[in-house]
Structure formats: C-alpha cells, structure tokens
Image (cartoon, rainbow, N blue to C red):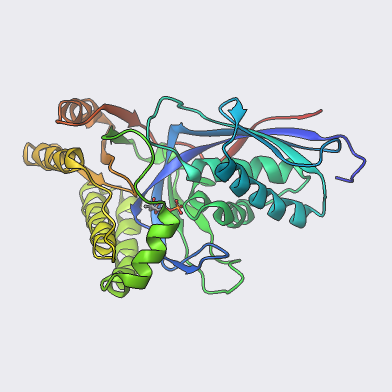
Length: 336
Ligand code: PMV
C-alpha cells in the first residue's frame, strides 16, 4: 500500500481463549514476552469483531467500541498497537477502528485476547501486510500476551521463546476445534471490572510472591502433561492439570504483597459444584482466570447437566456454554 492508494477496509473476527495451563508472569514487559509457556482453548461465539481502515484525511486514530467512542485508556492501547503495524508496513496514515464484542451481554468477560487477535489480523491486512499465522501471533502478543493464542482455533500452545526480540515467543495450534467435542461452561459470578489488571498483578506477583520461582518451574511439567492429554483427548487428564495450574497461579498471586485475590464467595461455591458433579460421575473440571468467574470444562454430552448445576449455585448470575472455535479470520475485505 502506498500513501496514495485507496484504503482497504478489513473486518476480522477472533474468539477469546481460556488457558488451561496458565500464563502468569513476563520475562520482558516492554515486548510482552511470557516467562513460561501456556496452553488454551479458543472459543466460538465469545469474541471480538474488529474493522480497520487506514485513511488519508485524518490526523489521529479514531477508535469506537460497541458503536461508541472508546474510553481513553483503551484507545491509547489500540493506538500504540497501531503504531507497531504502521511501523512494520512503512505507512504514516491514521486509522479508523470499530471494534465490538460478539457477545455484548457477557458481563464481566471483557476479552483483550480476542480483541487484539482480531485487531492484529484486521489492521495488518488493512495496512497491506500479509502475515503468516506465526507472525500474526507475535504481533497480537504485543497487544496482550493471551491474544497470541487466539490467532489459532481449538487448543493452542504458547511458546515462551528464548530470543530477546520475541520472534520465537509465539503460539501454535495443537488440536483443531472440530477434533474434540468439549464445552466450556462459564459461570459469571460478578459484574464489572476485575480487581487488578493482569499486567500489574503479574508484575507484583513476580516481585513479591515467595512462590513465583516455584510457579514458573512447575509450568513446563504441566504443559507436557496438558499437551499429551489434548493429543490423546483424555478429559480427566487434561482436567486434572487445568485445575492444578489454575490453583497454583492463584496461590502464587495470593501470596504476593499486598495479596492479589480475585475470588468471591460464588467462585468458591462454583468450585464446590464442579467437585460435586465429579463425585456424582460427571467429568467436569474448573479453571479461573484473573477474575472471579469459574470456567468448567466438560464433554459436550454433559454440558446441559453442568450448566444446570452451575446455574443453581448460590451467587452465580448466569452461565454461558461455549464450544471450541476457529482461529482469527477475515470476514470482509473491500476497497473504500
Ligand atoms: O493476556 P493478559 O495479559 O490479559 O493475561 C492473561 C492472564 C490469564 O488470563 C489469567 C491467564 C492466561 O493464560 O490467559
């Protein structure tokens, strides 16, 4: 694309992803390089749709979120990300960006993973770049560490990499979304923003938690176990490692100073529900991210029972049942 060429208007979609082996800690904050690997499931339906075009007639980036002007903090993050794309494409034009969650009613599930994966794809294409999935993953990572995984569908693994420029800190696909009929039941236990943003929480954990080194040492073992379990489609094995990884991540964060506690009473109640389901013969396994919601992995055939049990758990406001989804993809591309 030259500065004189007409703008290309690109719309991309990406699903959010939920880590089953958690990412918690950075080896380089500026480049957003993870200190350890992670493994996740990309979800259908719950995600972001983002449209981008670089235009000649404006002197700043215009960002809307859900049809309204984006708040200053979000807009600033998107502008910094667009700078990376401009730099790489060698263009100076500013952009018009319209982004929206594909499930607007999913209270408290704001997803930077889906948002930056969709933005990486839409913005790079609109800027005239044709990046490989691996290059897109590297770019998306600069927006949010977990976004690198949402470039891929189904189960994806993030490699921490060893290079200082971050070129090998990228995700790759482990199992296609159609290959294993599982569900993730998301129990929403609160409204609004999380207590502390993940970047700040990771930084504080790394600096002050006495368990941080041991946490990092435990991740490669969990990753090997989870990758094998996914390859074998062994739900009980994957579920056991997912629960262990989530508990260790939260224990490590809780031991920071001041402590970082994301849970509320409904979080604990939903954990108890998951264990009761299991005691009753239904293989169901929880994970919890940097927030109070509980995400329960199960077979598609058991999803209705898991949904019903979570929905009647005290404090659970709503349950979403989500299937594995595709990686980031283009939904529209036109001149104008
Ligand atoms: O991508 P970030 O910076 O929002 O961090 C994600 C952190 C967790 O969601 C808690 C874990 C993960 O691996 O996604």
